[in-house]
Length: 470
Image (tube, rainbow, N blue to C red):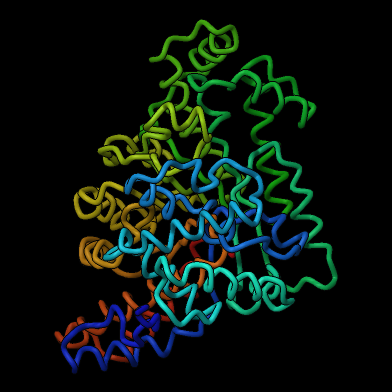
């Protein structure tokens, strides 16, 4: 017999009855607050086109590497999950859905289970926990919903209470879908692009020369030399800013920002274009350009966010077969204090720089990130992401950073998702955990209840709006 799928109203709250009641009261103050999503990966065309979602598998499973990686770890080949395919037939989609339901136990104890349960129950009214026996029935329930107008992307955007949604965009993107959405008189939401220049800053990556050549074509600036390349990047940042962008996002293996003098930078750039730059030179150039990105942020005002420390495409055969973002980006050890010192020496007190630091190495929270944010006005602490956006990890994060930097140096929650329907579930989880942590501080007489409520409201609203200049 199938288990009932009914997310408990007190999920993630403390077991102690008195503290749980405090958490309930704090949570009620923020439960319905608008969602601010300043970092994510939803395709803006989904909203611009407003076409119905095609099927349950491509909505819940194939675009979400949180889901596919655990199924793959459980022995399911990615091709059986439709990964890398633009569309699925109904037969294939049902097959993918059955795999999820048959292996539901793989998600026990994970945040993915929490998100999926919330999506199924609260968006689509599913009342039974998925299993092999009810897979087709649940599929039919969701597929039936997706044919109705209230389940189209824009309707769900409104239903989810999203106030601002940021996408992640290539610097050469013409942002046509953003313009089309913003120019639609029937559209009332706010979706902003984000400048993501990683592949233009790394001469060691395949395709770098073609990318910077394309940058020159798009801007009309000759990128044959270093000076033109820098001007072209500045021009695209300006273009993004004019089209609503508020931040520039960066993800590299480390965050070293050691400067090169102009002659060195020009020499390495020329060598990289000629294909003769060494690996060490390519790395030095990327580190120098991260410093240059900070300099540009002080001039154009784009918030600088760093998501470092990931070995992208850890399994080369999977990358070759299915492409990037397929579940095998694995964390690295990180160092921030010395790595960021050149940047912070120059710009850490600059009134026009906001630098948000994220990490998947939680050993850096109390040792490096919180102390940096606790001194430099420009530095803010990004929410736990990727492997750390889980209940226990988020609670550890709060304890590790707030005692040193305070709640005022937090940047708010980011959902960092490609799975559109998981956005409200992820934000709800973060709000419940905020309520829990703040309730514990009240119970320990470290905060008054009205201060806890004010802090909770700031974390979901005023703080991300202020930090990301929204």
